[in-house]
Length: 348
DNA sequence: CAGGCGTGGGA
DNA sequence: TTCCCAAGCCT
Image 1 (cartoon, rainbow, N blue to C red):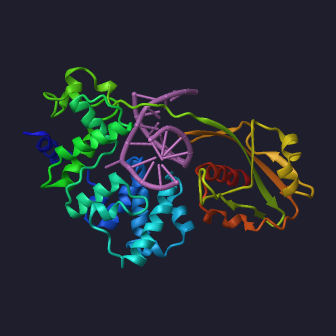
Image 2: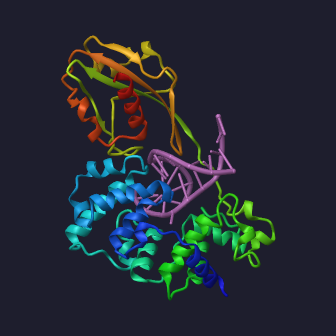
Image 3: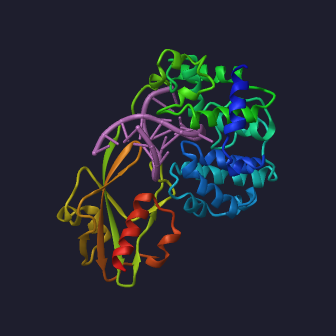
């Protein structure tokens, strides 16, 4: 048997039953593919069920408010996926009559859809012979063929795409693509791959040369930036606070947060209340206490956010327009959501 | 085009 | 604890 036949044979016996595999509705497949970008099935599953339940069609998604979509996405991370998802839903509903594009060429034009996702939808839903190349495919192919080209170099990206395309079983592209990804996720795993029971054991270069742990090769490690966040959690006598939307380029675009003072290091109460931002925000008398005695280190993949939550109580504040009882409607980062949970818990 | 973008789980 | 990294995409 050749490579693709072995793979598909393995898949027929070992594939996972996943909700988005029940139909070839491109809307459902698209939802699942966007959610699973850089995300484990176990983490994405609940979100997929919630989205398909709340938004059964692309029109339902298109008609929702962006903040509603972000709220439902809360906790899944990489929020640009949710914004692009909503943008593309509106485009399909309004400009394309709700008809999902059916070719790789058209799919890749859509915001949030790149080479991987276009190939996945085109092959799974429309049987177009385009090979997917995701993290699983990089791992399986680099090990099987013993390829040491870095998977995140431009040379590597091209090389693996070409190789994947030559291996594709074009008579059943969708099945083949899902087979190689499931095989990577379940069998040819990053750690402790199941080489002893592998159907490729007699032809895998990495297994033969004991290179499994070295492959795939990835170059460059990301640098982590340390940042110091001071959130000012306002509580007025009439139970109101300030939440504002994060705009611009950085993290958490479109999500809401308490007024933020970012500093170069950990600061104490004195430094906080003498800061320009604080004085501007609170001209009148306030009572301030630090909620978390030790800073909370919220770790993003590329930033460590050393965070202090300052509870600021004041009688009245015109800018505080958000009722505490309505905070849960707002999409917030996990860092804020975790704080809110603890805070509400303690005050009850 | 290299860097930026979240979160949670496992070793 | 720390590190890696999981069905990538955008600019």
